[in-house]
Image 1 (cartoon, rainbow, N blue to C red):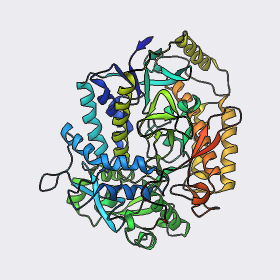
Image 2 (cartoon, rainbow, N blue to C red):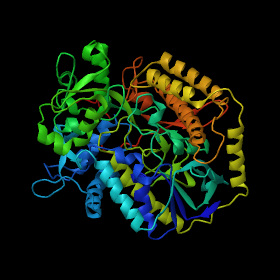
Image 3 (cartoon, helix red, strand yellow):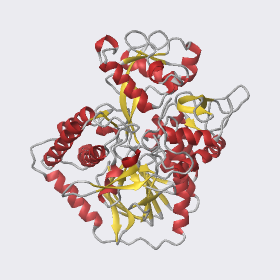
Image 4 (cartoon, rainbow, N blue to C red):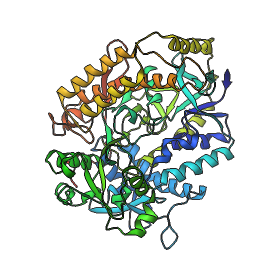
Length: 575
């Protein structure tokens, strides 16, 4: 089946919805989403969205900018970070006017709380900057934008999986997708495509990410010629539930939660004496693992305790109800009376499709654009997060740059030529899927995916070494060879989830290889990338963004581009 739209947006999280709202009143917009829109992973964001509103105490956008630059370990592009920090208060007022039900101060203003790495007066002390709706902030913003999208008449295609980008004569002219319910191939012709497909946390064994976070948009853009940027920077959130990875929001520490080792010691006082448990996530994750390595894990196991027992029932019930419900449901812990067992869990990709602040996908170190192709949200690397994202900057990022991408696409449409329509795309894709169904291989995808996830967790997670990364790359390349021998047990087309599981595994193998190659190239420790064989940050050689070009035959090709530095010169990151 063929469709014609002005714009196709792939992904119905907050970046995709915000762009759709910006476009929907004046253009024909189709939003494709592999899950029902309100199941998008943006709804899992718990703790808050950062903005220098100053509702609880004095604040300013340039303090927010400094904290973000410092949090990024000086790898974030400061021009883009300035845009985000300046636009944050407007974004929050806009959300308020849309009807997002934020918590309120006694005066009726949007309530704010402290979050890791956010400080007053350029690093002097923690500050309340995270605007929140209990511990369901992403959920309520997603629901609100979904309602606005329906009001704008946006057309949604639910449970449609992206199969390929249509690239003709160097420009993107649409996408090919497949509906889960029928297995039918759909070709969407458009003048512009926005990828807002989220992250790829399912590459790792332990993750807070949903099952749908498999990096589809990143991998297909990469295969189509768009470089990936800074893929080695993968955020591990310090407080995932032990063994499960389910997130216990940073809001718990923002409200006063304390991390304790087996001796009951508040160990973060030793590592970050000024802001303690509210240090940036990369630091807290490393500190937890250092405590475990030193034998101070709880009962000699690979976790520590997050203690909320001193906060009181009112704070827990009003502000942390969802996450304490998770603790009760999954590990049988009543957080009002006993600590929660936590360990680092894969949470967020700082890297992604190389993009600029207006959503253009860029193709080289000079900023040349990929005509017709845009990216926003976690699948894109602008880069405002650099080597480490501060908590509550993710919702801000996807809303600010989702809106900007929508505005830029609207300008592009004013002069964009009609899309080129190569014949036979639907038949070609249908034949590809049929070949997949007809395979006579001797392997199933499950064991390959499990081995990939374990390999990445063991060798390419919080701590890395040359030997471990080499072993990971060798292992991933063996898995890519085994991938060619996968066969499907379900030979039907209707509701055949196995087809998409196999395709997603292919995407994740490509992205896992890119992460490992980037990590091997970067011979320093910076932010979330911690090389035990190169423990220091090396600004002389590695104050650059890593760019990776897809090469099916020889593996990713690495090149670099400079970091944009405007106001804050790199310095040692201390808290």
